[in-house]
Length: 129
Image 1 (cartoon, one colour):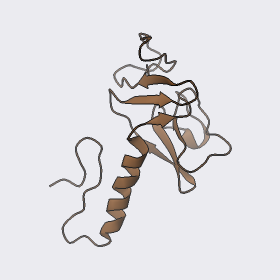
Image 2 (image 1 turned 60 degrees about the horizontal axis):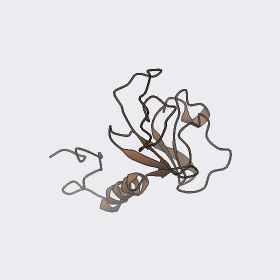
Image 3 (image 1 turned 180 degrees about the vertical axis):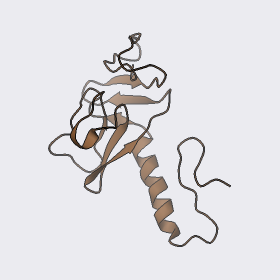
């Protein structure tokens, strides 16, 4: 048996594991972040100077400061720090301010042209259409 689930990489509780609640809570935290994904922005490269618990963003290309090295990932502010989750192709996120939907396409290279789909929304990031 593996240590994590095959799709969301949720941690499994292992036989005779101490402190099982830690593993269970980490799985709940991941689910809380990605289920019904709604983000505040998908074009932002720099984390906001003030973030509230549970704020979520899609890190744009060339992420900076705390977001450096996490391009195209989901950034979630939890327990006073940023947690990053890699999206899988086909994931859809609602961008709260504009009510647009963006779809993750992990197969394109940064800078590649993206096709636009009016029914889904318009993305500037080549991986989030």
